[in-house]
Length: 385
Picture (tube, rainbow, N blue to C red):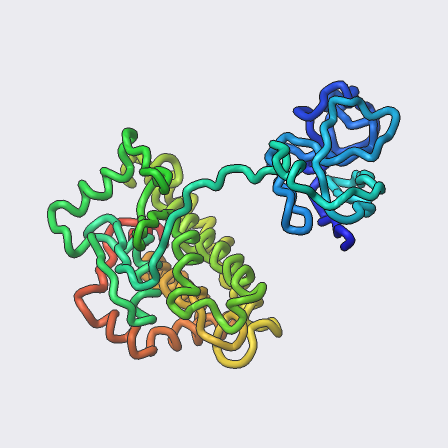
């Protein structure tokens, strides 16, 4: 069975940790600095973050070289790992304009035997403890009480899908804020399977704890049936890139319109800067982001209907709805003018379509929907003057 070498980034082809006497300082046009260590024996070595698997047998730990080809220039310190098959493909990697070609071994190697199976290099590295999730486990959203904020971007997914979830902002009363602060505490180091989180929203599902809005959305979308028509292919990544752009323009940049200097300062303490930032946003950035969304809708990948991708409602459409809804609250005059221009009809048509969906409509009319006040989307009339 022939071993088909994968296309690897350049950092996977060299390692200054493996057989240092096999390397010398390079000065050629390669992707490494001139003081980087370069392999001169033209054999493939495993780098710090490469784990190789050949024919399902070898799982090489980091910093262990693969079998050499017997080149006389190859020092004996390069220990071999028994491999199946014949390794004979060029490795190619590009960084910038540089292209490296690196030979792997051409020689035939015997099938692994019981004896060489015991070689330390051929043994699998210990598996890290994995977080176990149960799709039937309850979902728990942990966020600040009293504001919609970034937590709303997660809530609309649950509401559209009709999936029950616990929202600690509404169920924990006076304990809601301390609960959030506990996750952000400098002394919180997570647990055996979950690293500490930085800031809310936080999602708990079974034994899994994660944060960061795009991370939570990417996790939830397939589980809630909101990953679009191509959920098993590349479509999820296309949706993710759309969502990341929406969050950049309608969440992060919106926040900077009222807190352009520092989050530790109040709005009043940075009002002059906020006016300048808000004007730049409404005059330049808001039309640019709306124009991007319209281009996505005009693309062939949008498919039929009002949706962003694949002709089917997906989580990106819900994110757009919430982002545009919050922006309309923060800058009603500016959004109104852009809507009247007729340049972004598809964007506002999608917004209306989501707003009229039965579950979303019911949610917007319920007391579960937190009114806008402070948080990400704030309305200061003077920022539109």
